[in-house]
Length: 322
Image (cartoon, rainbow, N blue to C red; front, side):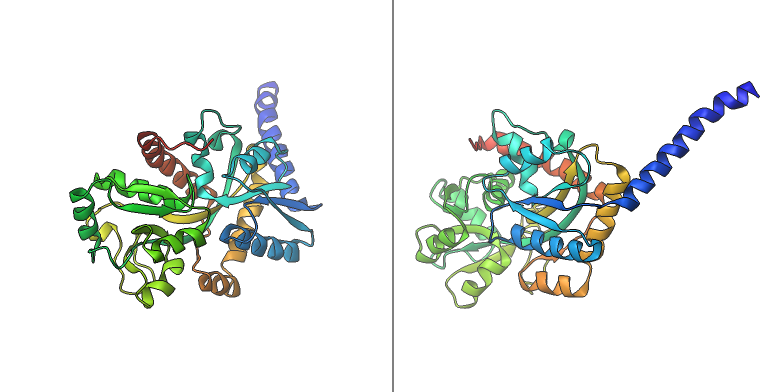
């Protein structure tokens, strides 16, 4: 009996902890939730507010969206320092996990400090050129860039942004020398390529389409892994001479590390349910945003793979965000 009792204690403890965790998940949330996100007005803010509104309605608790500007340093630091209780969350662009690669010091480590909830959405990118550039395909662009190193300028929407990093990945994988010119936002960068001030731009498909349809830009390829219904008939970069190339603007959802598993599970299940609602999918697709709604494990794997690939690109290109 003594032996049986000795082995029974750990088992009973585990059962009690599991039951306590399940109860914690069932009781959650019992007060308002805060979602930290990017500056107001962009796609990140749009999706964060849509999710917050739906969560508030289904859980009967206020979900507050708190905008934090900058490159993600402030937002990531806020999440890393928040209590691991599920009441402070982070909804941001996937580039937030690349912040430590671009700084001498970082106030957070995304692997150590963040607990994945879901990779929520993805917006396929595209490569566009000014009509004066004598290229009709990605292969033409690579050939011209190699023939004229340092003479083609790319408009990005700021250091370390998805448009900038997509261009740097393209340069890395094609061995080309294309000059990055940073602008303050998408509108300013679009104006630069439309006017011919620069010749090349990596941005979202929906940003380019209105101009490509009237001949003010030439759409060469989409940067997603697969063709997209947002740009029918347009090939991928990977299928156009750069095998393995993929770059999309993805939005991700995190809680602080050590948040109880039951709470993370509830957050994932409810967020995935919301994202897969027909009205949500339709609203996002009209904005050029496609629902992914992954598992936490899939988000963790995506983060690991992206940090491995883009970390090398950032180091080789000496990209700094100070």
